[in-house]
Image (cartoon, rainbow, N blue to C red; front, side, top):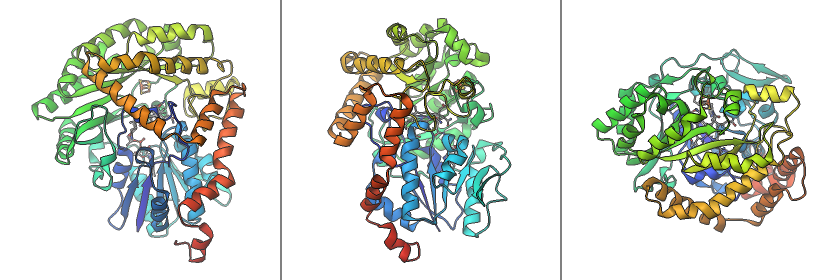
Length: 519
Ligand code: B12
Ligand code: SF4
């Protein structure tokens, strides 16, 4: 039996948009697929593709789909939904009968929408054991009724089975199947010679910021791997030739004691990795010695969710433990990380109701003071979050949130704010950051050089179609957000586009079907 696991095709490339921007500091291999692959039973031969990072020859994609007995697609964010939809539609076109399993943060909260677009079954939340059981059902031709934590369509209705308990002990999960991935196409910005990988030390977050999905997805809990297990995995990764790493897990840093112990253990074991991670705003204030120790264990950069220089907004979002994050602590957080030589990426949320467009330059100026590299996100109410429910109830959503592009405003009343913030962000990128290529801070210097190399490569790969999309998103005609998004979705999912993609796989769907579904 053949299982194909894949991230969405990068069918809608976007030049110079924050949608592809995460590629700048990575790309990092998705532990999600390597972890799921480790759960497949012995009768399954698993193949993993990551077109988001590696790009892909559509002929090869078509060949793998043709050979698959099941296809698993992950979709973590609304930013990826359009690409994921094109992937589902393409697989369906090539293999009308193949089971398509979808999972991740996005399908978890949009089961009906994904089933309508061609998925066979949606995995809600944690996926390891659910997927193992689904594969067994597919292999033994059993119905999905006995599998907890899924949705599927039957007799024109959606069946949702009882929720699945979270795995009590993350250490019970096997070592991810990195051997199935081509790790050669990943490289962290520190650009060492070895391989780049990802590792999960914990899952979930105990905070409950109103715009974040972590709370609903992982039940407001944070589960940890035991430090000896993490160390064991790190040694295996090092033996594979890895020397660059992303610690995934959005609650990283909490509690500081665990992370101090982890750093000490890494130093003692002589683990030589350059690594980056997320970092909760409260961790460093609770343990000011953390940055220094993390840096000694190889930490080169962290993503910190500062989100706003407005205390009122932080309180409104319930940011931090018990909603108590304080803007007054931000300069100190940055000072401690900076002193340790750690590059600080600072998330900033713009485009919320009540924000005045004329305040945005000042917001961005303040935000710059506590990070090396500002990462500007348009507030994006994600289905499953309290913010989404609130804005939906108040009729404030400017478009369907199933899809998202960072350049399209999500909220009514903020139509001008997002373009203004993006304009200022681009200005920083083009005129301020180049000088940092000579910064005395090594991590900053390396990142900025890496980033411009990436941008030049993106520029060289620019297509006329990508440029047209980019110009559409600049929205010179002042089209409302919903219209802008619809135009983009309609264009990329049109019959003509889908047929052209199918042709490029070299496997015309009609011909394959005549041969009994296998092409
Ligand atoms: C690491 C990470 C990244 C890395 C990804 C590197 C990589 N290649 O993996 C980087 C930094 C690049 C990144 C980027 C972005 N990210 Co991110 N990221 C994460 C993070 C912290 C961890 C993901 C992870 O690996 N988890 C560990 C694995 C094991 O868990 P998992 O992926 O959820 O998979 C489990 C289940 O979901 C399920 N499952 C998932 N897929 C599938 C598929 C099948 C077939 C099955 C059966 C099950 C299944 O089973 C898995 C095992 O239990 C998550 C938050 C989180 N804690 O998960 C945010 C998160 C996914 N990211 C988020 C966002 C918003 C983004 C960005 C849009 C940010 C931005 N504005 O640019 C971009 C995405 C755009 C893009 N073009 O890629 C949001 C998504 C919210 C949403 N639904 O819209 C999240 C949830 C953070 C948050 N709390 O809000 N991200
Ligand atoms: S601290 Fe970060 S991961 Fe935790 S709920 Fe808030 S935004 Fe989400």
